[in-house]
Length: 317
Image (cartoon, rainbow, N blue to C red; front, top):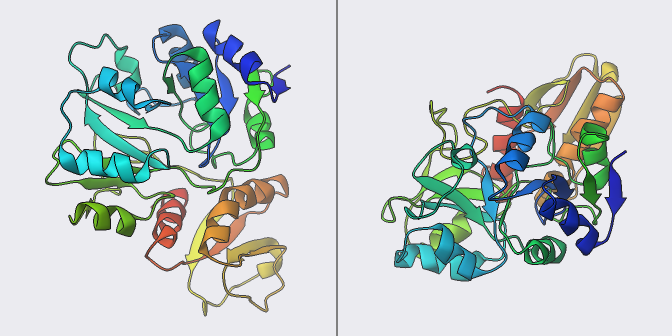
């Protein structure tokens, strides 16, 4: 039986002893292991059914860890983003420290790593308690909707992982934004996320190319190559005036109230509410064996762009 606890020290003990646990962040729940415990990291891939060429994100609690993990010095564009948005839902792809002995299964053998500092006190306290950065993909079976509360984690991993560190429902409900910083004069968006791309561009005064739909043979970050975030139901993205056939057998999530008699509905108050509840709605529809989910196309800016990216990838596009 997977232990559910609110004790940081208890959860940290499992990690120190080589086991994997789930823990809350401000984005979604993560499935964590210490970065130098290769056996535990392999168990993350096994538990999730995660492809081996899909890199993991490092989670740190102190900038001193960044100096240890990546090549120095960092370009001013990178340090500007760190100063503006860490701790927070921003992951940076950075050049790996050449002297660091790191298991290649973490970053699929690349010369780069993905790093972020979460803005969640329990997550930061956990990392500090184990005295090691953690690798932590989302705590869901590979391809399924990400978990935004501990019960979602339990659905996927009860009796499979040692422990779930219980926290509140996640603040954003979407994963972190990922920026490829390997060329500091030509940043690329690899995954839209909880942090608006417009805010990032404003800080560095640099247009960032959207590369999030480039299904590279060797992806630099999570969320690029494979179908993600998918419920069992078919996802159909619609406009506010799209006509629906047989709504009684379907579900709807969006910002605009509709008159059709859907089997299940979530009407979001705003784009953030849409984002926070998207994955939970997907999972709830699966529990009711709904075959089709109609999702209203959000605005293609701010967090709406991240929602749209999730909808497209969940639909297999």
